[in-house]
Image (cartoon, rainbow, N blue to C red; front, side):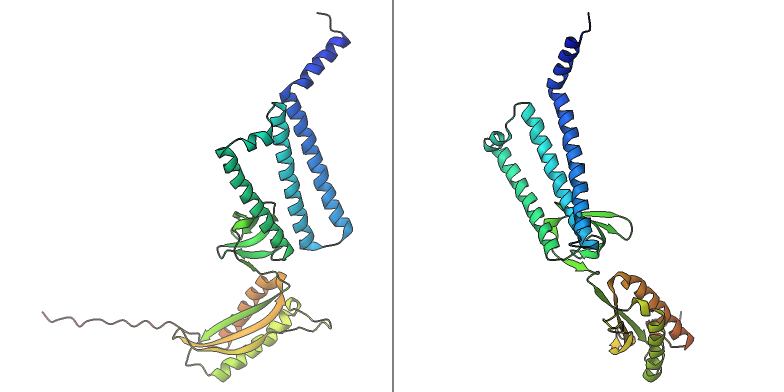
Amino acid sequence: MEFTLERFLEIGKNILENNFTQIILGGVVIFTLTIILQKSVRSIFQRSKIVNGKEQATLISMTNSIIKYVATIAFLFFALGLFGIEVGSMLAGAGVLGIVIGFGAQSLIQDLLAGIFLIYEKQLKQGDWVNANGTHEGTVEEIGFRVIKIRQWSGTLVTINNGQVRTIENFNMNKMRVVESVTVSFHEDPNKVFSVLEQACVKLNSELGDYLKKDLSGEPIEPFVVFGITSLNNQFQGYQYTITGLCEDLVFFPASRQARRIIAQLLFDNKIKMAEQLVEMHTEPREKQ
């Protein structure tokens, strides 16, 4: 068979008219446009400087998620249309299927609106350390069109639908208060304990001063201080003393860990006896044989 230009064009036309070929080409075009749009969104946010840091990353994540879902739906409609399936007519006359899809769309809209309100009300941002619904605690990795992804300390990635988020405990809301309590034996002199804890506060303010929240003049808003005796009989074991200090939210966890280390060391050096649980054991006298 003679292979001419006309024959080549005819073969190319047949290939292009094939539905599967058009699906592949359509997918490539939609995928390319999606990547371009996502990069454009990132560039616009970075250049506009309307928002910065975590808020910028959060809005970029949400917008990219919406673009991805819209692109996926557009591709599905395009593919079905190639096979002569009119999606609008199918949904209108699908009966039970239409009802099921309607409920699915309702859930989708609920998740979308919940996600928008989470961002608009500034309840959380990408990179925040949060506790969601009192059960999932970790770093917010992504706030998407439908879901929030939280990376727990163990490394586990938890995915929660936006509409299922009921409570958010956010540890990154500009400031956090370090609250460390110690329970000391009833036999320890409170004046001595106060003196040691005040020494601990001096050391805390010296070594952890960079962690403290500062005012406009650069002075700590709430340096580490002995808040006082917060319980006279903590769990029937001893007096409870509490130290507090206001720090930057991003350093709350390292500040808390180092504060506990410094307090524990000073209590040990000064031989302050901590509370110990008293366990009483009673035995019945053995009867003589």
